[in-house]
Image (cartoon, rainbow, N blue to C red; front, side, top):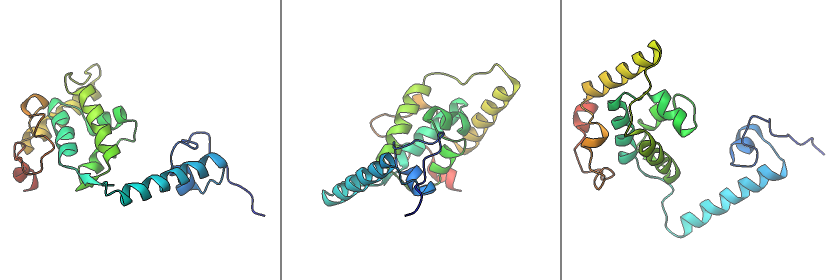
Length: 164
């Protein structure tokens, strides 16, 4: 009989499928989490629910936060992920509904305040984010319409200029 792998303490033990999928954890909690996820995926597919949705609104929200001066690192940290997470999302055509909901939560929390500017690093990070957003023509949150932000055919954020 093989020895069971136990989740490292710094991982989300049994809360998602990462520990089992990436580290091969065979503990009961991680096995249960993986089984629940597969059950959910199967039933989402069977009922015709989308496992991936268009990322347009998600990307627009991230870009609007950048127009305020929020860096990818700060956006990702607010979401509870590593510094490159939000940048990677901006390169995707589709995202999971959970990812989209996470960005909506982050956007709601950050869109009505400016990033901190207590240190020179914070000032420079905000300046870089704002300058990049300005060069790309991305509007700030108040310039976006909440009713149309998720519609792919709405061209209010100058995506053509960003793609060029």
